Image 1 (cartoon, rainbow, N blue to C red):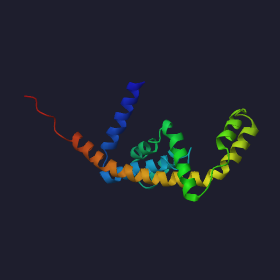
Image 2: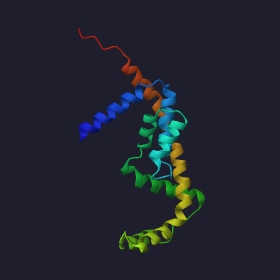
Image 3: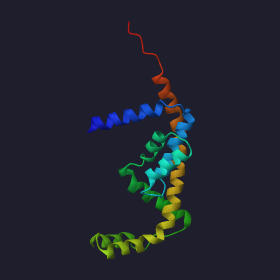
Image 4: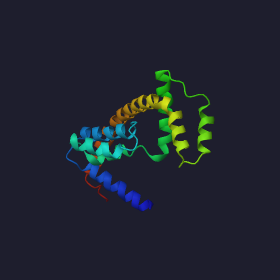
Length: 168
């Protein structure tokens, strides 16, 4: 499994570095993907990334790598921190005893209507903080991704086009 993952990553990196796009356009595609991947449009990231990459004629592989930068173990901490940031910026207080109410909900069956209606009621006041915070976080991460990707792509391409070292 790890060998398959390494092979897939190498294949994508090879395609990413062997394009006719400039490093800046490739980095822009990657940064756009990062922005989409960390946006509040959770669940639609891949579709939006592909559609925008086609529409803007950007490197689709770079865009998808950016979209998938939001790995599963980043999702909960990122959206929690960004929602708290959004709440503080908008002056929205979390519902009283949020943790206790959430624990009560998880005592219910996730297949019950009461669970989902209770969850919607509990999370409704946090919709705007979630949206604002994750858009702000996505913007910052996309900017950082672009700044870091340009020199990394330039170095990767230079290394690929360097003649092999002579062995004496």
